[in-house]
Image (cartoon, rainbow, N blue to C red):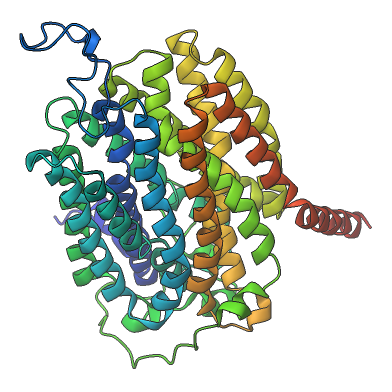
Length: 498
């Protein structure tokens, strides 16, 4: 007597080939950008090891004077101006990243994404590893670390426009905020993994805190070269535009239906059908930089992201040091504790996407979360280090509120604007629009840690005042779009009632 078909096989047959490919691309791009953030996180963890209070270390070497409190620090960061020197490492990376981002989107639309992305990840791996080799080669020259921070910053710009463009090619607008909110958790996952990996080596051999992440991102670059598919048409899958035209987007299963009963897929093609590529589709021409700026909403969201990303990246680069200084944790504990902020960011990104899909207002969602962030930052600075439980709770809430708008703008909003109706179906604007928005955000990302390096020497309170003001300015730039969305919602509400 023959048994019935195995449950897992039935599940495989219940999901269309289009859905398998879309899930595969979602997983790949998630993995790739996780590795990007994983490789840029170690510097924030290693900072507290480069300059330490050596008087707290028991049993110092016999030839060390009792008055020497910097013998265990790494030159040139053993000086009294170490915060400014550490800040220069952040600034060199982020300025290079901001400048390179505006160019990266242009290149990303004119080069094959698979080659561009895989080459970028391998290059990032090499430059990240060179930072760690400074430990083994006993290099104490500041220019060495600044040079490879600059090179790494330029190489890192290959990632974001490429993965967003690839996601935009495969996924349409339906439930985009929720899908992108889940997908964008790669940022927080990368930060968490980067903190944990760097923290595992920081007190014993901090060079490995860079080398191991460098190897990981380079390996992901090799995977990208062999597996990435840029367009659905290249493997005979249905494009998002065709799915939306037929009203079938709700039938596309993105997440495994056994664990997430959100999208219920209907099979469209048998799994054992040939999956060879069709004739190459004629893809639209790339849009100009000025043309992308003319898309409604691009300028407002770009300026908003400038200040929102300033806040997020100040936490990214300075939170472990802040926790170590204020709460008096050792470098590893401070790095591990900072991952709670990123964990809150995962929830914030998903929640922002879900809410914006439900109410149909991206700007309203961002604005409300930004307004709530300002008092939360003040409370965290004043009372966040009173007890471990308080620190944990406030870090999660701050991460949720800070990274929610940042996540929504860099994913769903960028994809919406890159496929705006004014483009008449030209999805080639995706990479350029993403680069413009994230490029402006990167200017803020460069300013935030730089200002923090200066203000922290006068007191951490000044850093948090700067973050609160930046948060309110980010909200201000969305005022026109919020007003427009509220009017549209009121109009829809009145039409539904009568």
